Length: 611
Ligand code: F6R
Image (cartoon, rainbow, N blue to C red; front, side, top):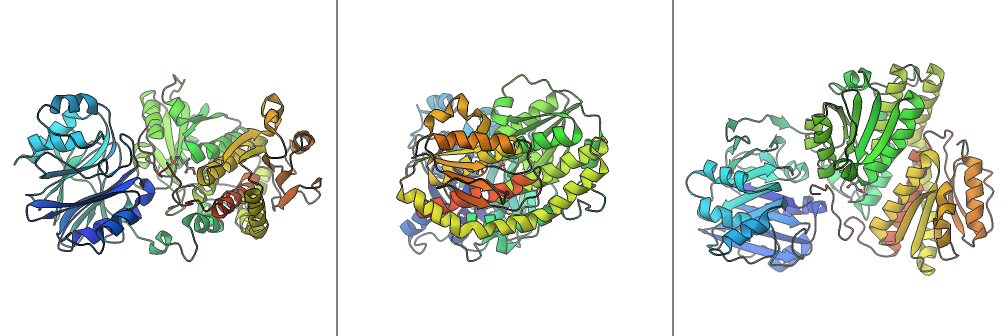
């Protein structure tokens, strides 16, 4: 949430900073701003709304010359998304400019203390940092960093520039990520790799608590105690094509269509169809899975929580281990029973979700072992866990998670298989059959794309009929599929959608059913609950609803008015992979028909680094 960027070098800073903001815009798009140092003062440009609005306001970069500067794209926490609240914020003298990602929890106290001598111009928590630095930014930069560290409470990635010191940009991290890109006679700084890799493969990741500064020739860092530290320089390959839409109108569609490839990447060299064995080459993963485990607790948010819910079924089924899938935002404040024999699996695309990280720290304090399932290499989660399984999904830019959901499912499926084989609870013949099914998934998902024209027609019908409420139902391993279908639809179409276990309908939600409710059911033949689900659907039909059914049954008993979306899936355990795809496409096509901003839904951002 919020993207910060900085640049010092020999080139014009303004276009580089705007490009960095564009590449990180999925982190927040309430406002954007840039401050470039120009002969002892700042050229400050800010605008509410998208980076595009900023570019339009500035025109062709007029009056923005300068080779050092900072820039910000905002997801508003404190203060409405106005120009005054947009970052960078200046101190009273106009010589210090500050950008911030996170929340300063004690900003009200700081502001009260500073208000006597400083003039505040915004309602943000972040502005206090500029005024704090106004008093502190002298020759001793370490003292300035120490004073920020001792004064600020909360989560912050702060970047600051001084108009009279164009050779240095200050930075400090407590929580949200900060990365430095080392170029040739130029240095970059950003919240995300996506903003750095087009310019340089040489990346330094600040550890939590680190502070320091960048200059044209590199960076200097101190740890949370103020001691100088060196952090490793990693060389990271940039897949330029992953950052483009590749001819598709939206990243979300491109990412949905990439899923067959995502599954191939997730299973390659980890799964043997001949033996049914799964294995991981990431350091420490095999040892963790082979260790003494009494219980598995999965912790995650949003879509990653839905993947964890599916994994719960797999772990209990294949490995006969007690498993639960917890919402990280709840678990962190509960008093969970965790100990050395609990394996905590933290699932996160970004690896930066504040609630998930808080669970990891809680679990560690209780002595539990922690396995991360994560997409972004080098993320905080991947570094704090005992071991990390990579999702291998590549860059995901659409705010709504799609290919990373299937990648999470794949990693968790392999993990459950591995646990089952290690504990001898999964017989070899069944393991081989599951492995065969998993290897067919890529093709099955690709086949599901042929449903797109039908789904487009359905979306147009929903628009024509002004359908404003949707209910997604499923059972067993496809109950989470229903939750995920509802989440996708609500986040990108702004239509009200609920996910329910089909067996729960008669405990309340059936009262909502009428001919105007859009009901989407996942009903897979082969599941123990297939016949039960058919009865649940009949109860819904009887109340006047027309159904949309995702099913693998060629003989599905459709009623007049039903729309049947047929998918190929031979196996109930792996059916969530395939059943999810028509639901993603439905959300996408409905959002497209409603002309919603699909890749950047309102009020949301990717990578939720604040609570
Ligand atoms: C929904 C979505 C979110 C994320 C959630 C967790 O489409 O993307 O619900 O799944 O914010 O994010 P990560 O996986 O980065 O921890």
